[in-house]
Image (cartoon, rainbow, N blue to C red):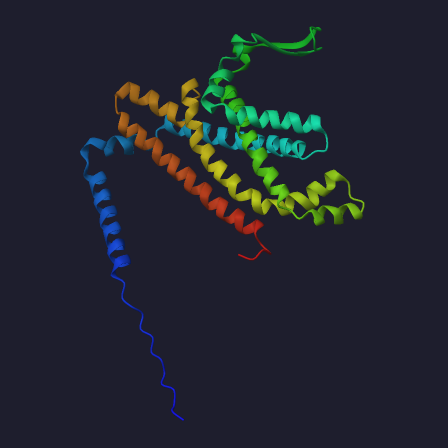
Length: 279
C-alpha cells in the first residue's frame, strides 16, 4: 500500500488586482496633488471663510431644516403607512393619493409652490369650514416665511417617501407575530408600538439613514427661495466677492462633514437594531 503524499497547494499569482490597486492609488495621489497646488482654487479664501459667521449661521439653518424635516417626515410617513395598511378603503385611498402626488411632483416645484402659497390663499386661518366664520387668521405672506416654506416642502415630500419605507418594514414582520399578540388581547395600537415597529426597525433604519443623508444635501434646493441655509449664504457671499469656486468648496466641505457624521450614526443605529439577527 503506497503512502499518500501531502498536497502542497500553491496560490497562483494574480498581478491584475495589484496593478489595478497601484493604478488607483497613483490616480488618487495625482488628483490630490493637482487640487492642492491649483492656485485657481484660492485656498486662502477657502480657509478664511470656512468658519465665517455667516457660513456657520447657514450651517445651523441646514442642520435645523434637516432634523425638523426628517423628524416630522418620519411621523407623517408612519401615519401614512399605517393608513395604507388599514382595513378602511377611505384611509388607504387617502394615503395612496398623498404618496402618489408628492412622490410624483418635483421637490423644487413643491418648494416654490409653498413659498408662493399666498398667491392662492392670501389669508390662512382656522374657522368653520364651507364658508363659515374664521376664528383666527393670518396674512399668508407674513406667516409663510422662506424657512417655513422650506420646512413644509421638505417635510411633506419626505413623508411620502417615508410612508413607503415604513410600509415595507411593517410588511417584513412575520404575520404570526401580530396573531400571537392578538391572542394575548393586545390592542391594535399596542401591537404596532410594542411588537411590529420594534421588529420592523431593522428594515426601516438603513433606508431612513440614507434619506437623512440625502436630506442634508437636499436642503441646498432651498436656495431657490432664499432660505438662508448653507448654499444660499455661500451664494450671497460669492456674489459680493466673486469667489464662486472657493465658496462652493467651503459649502461642499461642510456638506461632506455633515454626511460623514450622519453615516457614522447610521452605522451604529443599524448595529443596534440588528442585534439578535444573523449577519
